[in-house]
Image (cartoon, rainbow, N blue to C red; front, side, top):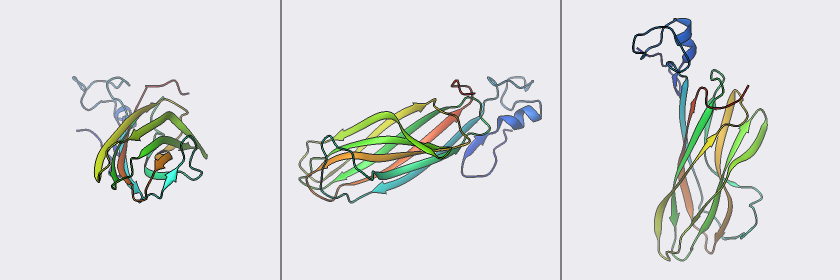
Amino acid sequence: MAYYPSNSNTVQNADHCYANNSCPGCPDNSGPSPASCPGVILNCGSGSAGPLPIMDLAGASIINPYSVASVTLNTKNLKNPSVLITFTGLISVPVGVLPNISFRLKKSCNGASQAIGGSYNYSSAVDALHSETFSFQVCDCGECCDCVTYTVEISNATLAQAGTTVSGTVSAIAVNGGCGCS
């Protein structure tokens, strides 16, 4: 049976496999190897932003971006982790708004933050009360650090009327051996 510590993350702890010189799930339960006993971390977070005020920032960035959702991973026990981050949001728009919203993914680790993966844009030409889903994915093979937080932010928006709300879930899965970190 695989070893899963009880905490907010779902973890297959590769160190446990190596310490017991066996690999749960391996065809012959023989000696460990990174390929047959990978370390995997999965975690998710959710949140919301809004109702948002009237904004006309075409081409400009919001000075204090609105945080929508974040997720934190402890990748200390992974070697050269590759992290897939997925955001799925529900954008609720009042009548007459015709929104144009830009999202970005911010990575925070070792006391520093940086945007990764570019900008992800949502726009709608429907002039009626409605809700729509919006999603994007980013694969991060950047700087390795023990504890990393990924935050989805609204970095730019054009909203002709107040009241737009964005709620969402961000999930991250990290695996061993995907990157060239040292």
